[in-house]
Image 1 (cartoon, rainbow, N blue to C red):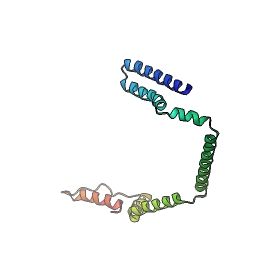
Image 2: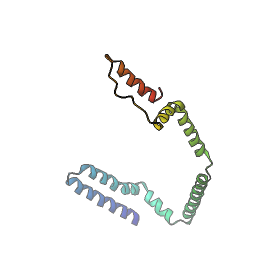
Image 3: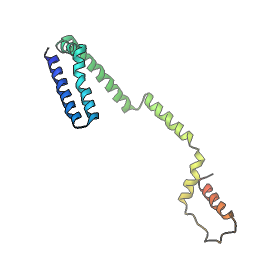
Image 4: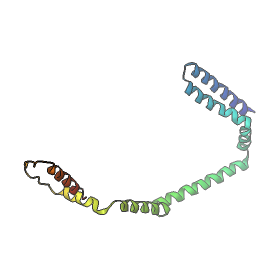
Length: 149
């Protein structure tokens, strides 16, 4: 009975705050506040609050919560041990993802660019450009060779 009264009072106060917020022309915020304020009222009307109050004073319910807590602790500790040891399906999935990623990149594609970046490149002195566009293609060829294409 007390829980229903408290939830109704919280809902009424929340709706009051929503009205004040709407008066200040903040309609989106007012709608959100009203939505949050109606949740406790809906819980009271559906009977969940009464069920929760009955559960809170039941020793069987508290024993059930203890069993659930123990199950959660077991689950969490086994996951922690699995991560520490490095075995399990996650490691296998990560290894498969890494191998798929390295297979997707052509091994020879990055080798020339790494090799050429380690060596200093000597550019010829400014040679006079030939007539036409043949010199432009030599620049493009040099770029393609640099990237191993």
